[in-house]
Amino acid sequence: MSSTVRVSIAVFIGYLVYLVAALLVGIRPDDVGDWIKLLVKGFLVATFAVATVEWVTKRRARASEPRR
Image (cartoon, rainbow, N blue to C red):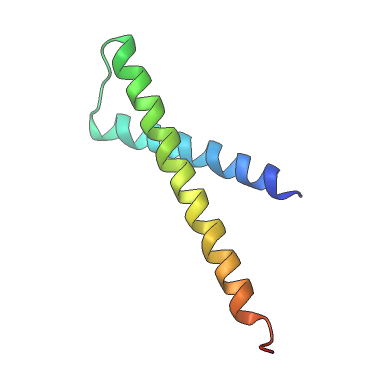
């Protein structure tokens, strides 16, 4: 599976988790502006999480490479 597909799936799952958690905590958007803010925040949180995981993976890969 390509990296783009994995990242897209991770963003989607992270996004859904953020939205469900926000709704369970009691954030109930009333108007369209609130929904848009919630969607943007969810996308940013999911993107940040994926970027962090990708950064850690690359860092570990570099650390396991033999030193010259």
